[in-house]
Amino acid sequence: MSEAILLEVSDLGRDYDRGRVRALHEVSFSAQRGQTLALTGPSGCGKSTLLSLIGLLDRPDRGRVQVDGIDLAGVRRGADFRARRVGFVFQFHHMVPTMTLQENVEAPMLALGVPLAQRRARAAQLLDSMGLGARAGFLPTHVSGGERQRAAVARALVNRPALLLADEPTGNLDSRAGEQVIELLVGHARSQQALLLVATHNPDIAAAMDRRIELLDGRRV
Ligand SMILES: Nc1ncnc2c1ncn2[C@@H]1O[C@H](COP(=O)(O)OP(=O)(O)OP(=O)(O)O)[C@@H](O)[C@H]1O
Ligand SMILES: [Mg+2]
Image (cartoon, rainbow, N blue to C red; front, top):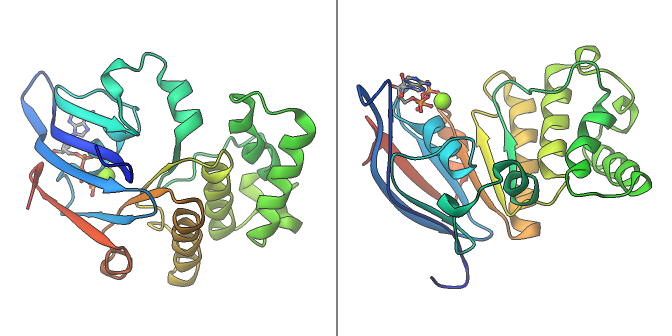
């Protein structure tokens, strides 16, 4: 594997419902650090399934995913792998409702054993850089949808992941708020030499990425 390749997906397949639903078949591609990649295709074509396998939220039935030369089939502690290497942003923010934005952003650093003072400082600085300094102490239900999603991006970026996976991250936002979220994700990929994969139905977002992987009925087209 060449050194710049971060992700290698080989003949990946996933079935659901005891093989009755073939969600993905024989999908292969590789991608490099610093790249931005759109994952497109109609509803049900397998985008979320593919992101779940790459982020080790799920395991494939066939084929292989390698991240940084590591075959994910050999990774026993998925949570540990995710905490160190993966940032996820979903369509719905999935923030913990009883924790402030600041506490939500601090949380992923616990898994890496970052000391409290550093957790506080890093989360505050990241929220500040996203224009959320004044909102850091608020609960997710007490801020706007755009602010909440930017905080979800901060949480995904806080451990400086090499792999940034976003599944319809702007699905619930107006176009300005959506643009801000995409700018933050792309900015991280560029500045940290991370790989960004965005599943999207939005043609403008797809066009803004370096490359596009298109799926139809679980296959690449
Ligand atoms: N847990 C599950 N059990 C059974 N079938 C599933 C499950 N998750 C997804 N599927 C099926 O697998 C296929 C791919 O679904 P997936 O969620 O990956 O599509 P998608 O491209 O993300 O769609 P959307 O654009 O609507 O989010 C679909 O046919 C879907 O119905
Ligand atoms: Mg989906």
